[in-house]
Length: 495
Image 1 (cartoon, rainbow, N blue to C red):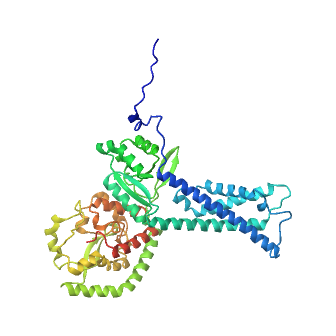
Image 2: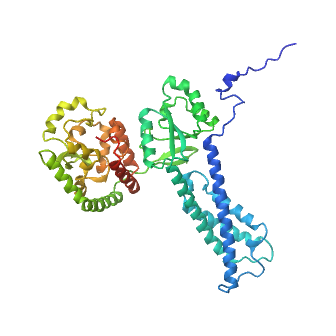
Image 3: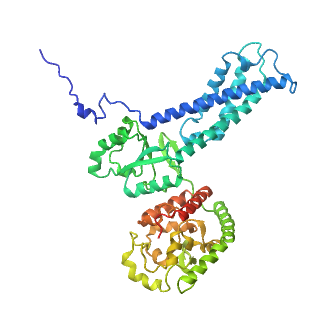
């Protein structure tokens, strides 16, 4: 008798890493469990509020009719009070909200206009059902209209309070989403700064890895097991090129129950807010024309004029005090004027409070070898001997930059934008760096509120400038200005 040959099966150890193993089970990570609990919580919240809205509408309608404040439209009874009809109301309303994706992530939940449309659509469906529900039942129009109004008010207010509560809790770091970064060190640095800019502590970065090296690729299964045990819910890929086998990497996360999010930091496209569209079953990234031109420019310019004028008026006593201290500290002028390169590579004179000795320019060449900025484009030195005593204080709290408000009024600078470079720094730029001069330079910028002198690589500073240019909005300017105030009072990495 011939023995039937059984197909060879991998041993137990190989089954743990072999994607073909039938014993592999997709895990439910902490992120998935929290997502489900969040969805259930919002479903219960909406269900309770919708029920309260209808019961309140029924009570108000009956009270008004009892006192003859409004004419009664009921001939037999109120449909909303029929047994089981409240269940129909909840099913239709909650399904309408869910169909609009309003139980998804935070971005979807914040679509409040879609929420209002979903509630109105559900009310229209209920109106049709009310007339067809049972022969002889006349629908109370007053109850229906009041219920629609109360639904809009109660559910919207409930969502706003819930999201505000979540934001407050996340600011304390209680409900932070644990994530892990994959990519090169430069790309992960930009991703960290972008997340830090949000400032609500929504994400807690537990670690990072560059899978482009053979050693890290070999240790990836062990690292994935460790981060899964730590409750990581999402992996952020900051540079797709650092992942050698994309499909294997994707399935390793899928079987571990971990979400994958790809950031366009390491891609060869502008770091602009993209619009994802499907064409022929393939995802495409649509990028709109650049901002800060046309109407955007004049909106930004008007804001700069009003804000800088008000600030100069309010800060005039402080400016006089600083000028007096500089004059008493060391001989020389109060202000320092230096030629900088601005919009369209035009030269202009930048105003600053003097923070160095009179012969600082002559001493610069002797200190060039001690430059701490990689690439040699900018010059930064932690213990610069040319800085005066009062100058060190002014630099630490960025008070030496205040006279640049006059540059803003003269139309040479903006409050927020890439920092204008000195001629020596401009000459060291590469061709691709010149794009940063297509917008007005600023007193503060994304680089300045993201670590300042701790960023010792000019390419990373350039990436931050481009991130600001491509994603500009007036709201982003407000955020950066608020961050600047925090950096001034709690300086970190400034010298």
